[in-house]
Length: 207
Image (cartoon, rainbow, N blue to C red; front, side, top):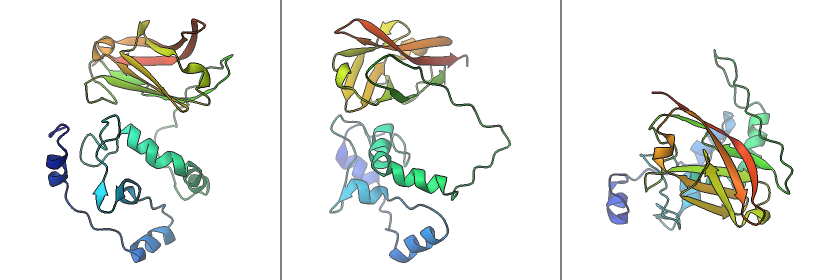
């Protein structure tokens, strides 16, 4: 955010972090933790990725991955993470009762919506902010073959841009569309059939 797209300034601002030694990694695993190296995944021959091909940054602050890079890192090892969690290595303790997961709509379509987000924010607070200031919406879908010419609608308005990739639909939402509190319906419009497919409700809370 501070240096924009200036690679040289960004690289000069990144401090070298020493690699974990094999002994440290062994100790981590022996104590029931799952070790995942961002450096191994995104760096090669001492050169680390800062942006992807669409100029989405690795991070928007100092160390939290952007959604795009987190997906690239975790999706290939999803089964390993699921197995690790199911194995009871992580103990979730909270004084609050667990939130019930929002049910995804059952659609009469050749694909299934598996997950989507973000799902809520406060008025004028842009979640998953993109380099151009817009909010990014992502939808994981089992099969995007039928959605090559789809447009995402947010609160009845077409998104600033809809992009269909392999099993993933992303869209860019103007911040003005989340300036007022309320529920904003998200739908996909299949241009070849004019069919509207409900995805879910995005909630904007008052400040």
